[in-house]
Structure formats: structure tokens, C-alpha cells
Image 1 (cartoon, rainbow, N blue to C red):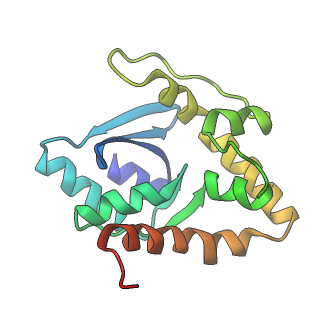
Image 2 (cartoon, one colour):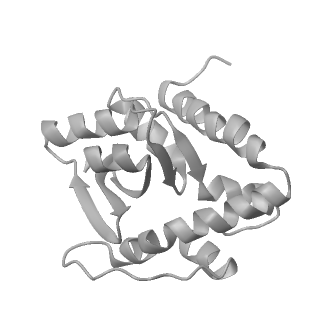
Length: 173
């Protein structure tokens, strides 16, 4: 999968957490969902490191702050974050009170091609994942129209990583 994502140059993914740690990463690639189960797997953790530390893969997700925190606990840094749909939606509507992924897909009228149900997996997450590429496109179009793309890429996305690190290690007051 990593080789394919490197060749593609981008990755759409969502992360499932348990007790503040990454349990699974769900990738949407070539109209297929691929799941990386991280629990108790040194090989999967190394794959995570290779993926997240690769600057050549543009990463598209929803709510990157907990991701940065969980990766930080694993000693992994995240490079190449191109879109965080939660942060983008906040920039476009700072007065909003619900930035959940499924609600954003409804608001932006994103066609959700759906995903084949996978037994034992989070079905809502799978459904949202298949619509993530369309939502990213719509949000980026609106950000560009408002001339806010740089604000997202140069300020908000890096700040999410800094805030996660501050929460993880604390800071003196």
C-alpha cells in the first residue's frame, strides 16, 4: 500500500483510536478501503512511521490534532498534511457548532459512493471515508474562493501539531 500511495502522491485516510492510541488507520485508495491494524504489531507501527514521516505523500484526513498526539506518543512525526477537513470547515464557518465528518458531507452535498460493509469494522467511519476525497475537493474550492488556503496550510494545520504536542508533554505556566 505504501508504494502505491507514494506513486499516487496522496492518501485519504481516517484513524480509529482507543484510549488515546491509534488502533486502526483506514485508507481509501482506488475506490477500495484498506485497513492497517496497529494493535500489537511492530510491523504495522513501522509502516505507520514510514507513511506519516514521508513528505512525498500529501495526507488528507479529518481532525488531525488527535492524530498528531497519538503519533507523538509513538515517537512518530507527521509530515505532508495537506488537508484537515475539520480545520477547513472551521475556517469557512467559525460560528459552526458541529464539524463532524458526516454532517460536513451533508452540508457540502458531497456524494458518498459508499463502501462495502466490512464485518467487525466501524460502518459509519467506512461510509465517511469513501466521501472524504469529495469533501476535501469542495472545502479546498471554498477555501480558495475565500483566499484561505494558505491560512489552512501554513497556520492551522501546523498549529494542530503544536497544540497536540503541548497537550502531550505539557508546558510551564
